[in-house]
Image (cartoon, rainbow, N blue to C red; front, side, top):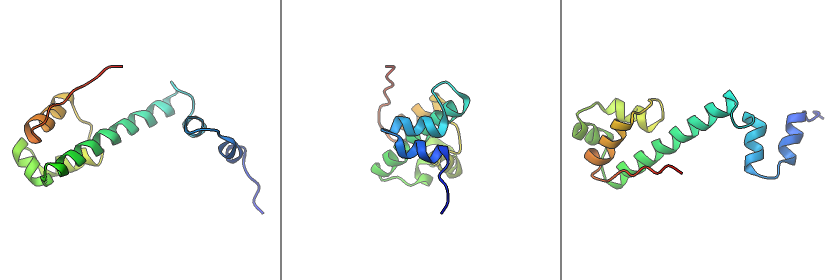
Length: 106
């Protein structure tokens, strides 16, 4: 029988999701945790864009044509493989999807 590591024991004893994240990625402010949080935020924005495109009944190709860009660029954004500038995000949402983008700082 394989002996459980200290990390495995901590995971089993975790009381909530935040504790699990801290065990896996470290405390807030550490490089590993910051990288994880940045990737998570990029994933969320990517999924929101993909879902909005689908709700608008547009293919990646159709959206790319509306924006004057390539389908491959839209694909990279939707899969989180390309960082996106704020101006590009506005253009995708407002020009490509015909919606309004609102940003809130909390």
